[in-house]
Length: 254
Image (tube, rainbow, N blue to C red; front, side, top):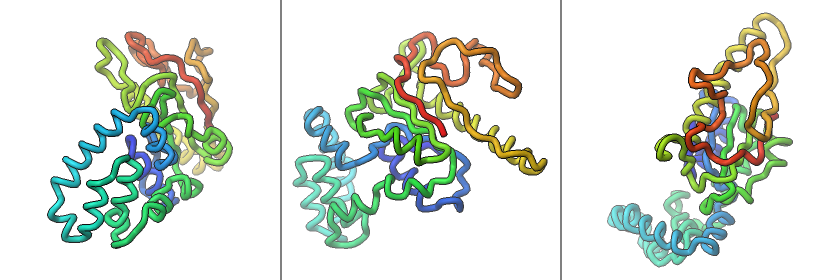
C-alpha cells in the first residue's frame, strides 16, 4: 500500500491502529508531513504564495463545492473554513467534520490524527521517502532517530532534491523515481516475506533486513540470493541515468 503526501499520514495512522491485524504486507509513505501543524506552519513562512494558492483550491474544490451539505451539519465550521488565512487555520477549522463532532477543536484533531502517536504499532515494512527541498512537508522534520532506532522494518530515504512529490527522472523528466523505488521496495518486501515463510517452515532463523549504503554507486558482486541488476543495467533502487535525482543523503534500515 502506498500513501502520498497527506495520504501517507492516513496510511501510517491506519497501520498503527490496525497493528498486526492489517492485511497489508508492506507500505510506502511518500513525502509524509511528520508533524502536520509544524509542516504547514513552516510552509506559511517559506512559501506564502503557494499556501495562498492551496487555500484557494481547497475552498473552491472542497468547501464551496460541498457547501450545502457541510452547512447542514455545521454552518459555523463552514464559515471558519472559508475565513481561514492559513493551512493550519483551515485544518483547525475543519475539525468538526474530520472528528464527526460539532465543536471539535484543532488540538483534538491534531492529537487524533498524529501518525507518530501510533507508529510503534506498525507491524509491516515501511519505506519513508522525503526530499530535502520539499516545501510542503520539510525533510527537516524527519526523525531518523525514531525511524532507525525505534521503528523495526522501516527504511528512511531522503534525497537532495525532489520537492513535494516531484521525483522526476528519465528523458524530459517524464518518469517517476518515487513510483519506481516504491514498487522495488514492495517487490523486495514480498520476496523477503516469502523467504521468511519458507525458513519458518524449515525451522531456520528469521531473516533480517540489510543496511543500504548512503551513496548510490558501484556495488560489490551479488551474493547468493541477492537481487540481480535490471536488464537495462541499473541496480534495483538506483535512479535512472538519463535524469537521475541527486545523491541520496540519508538512509537507515533496521
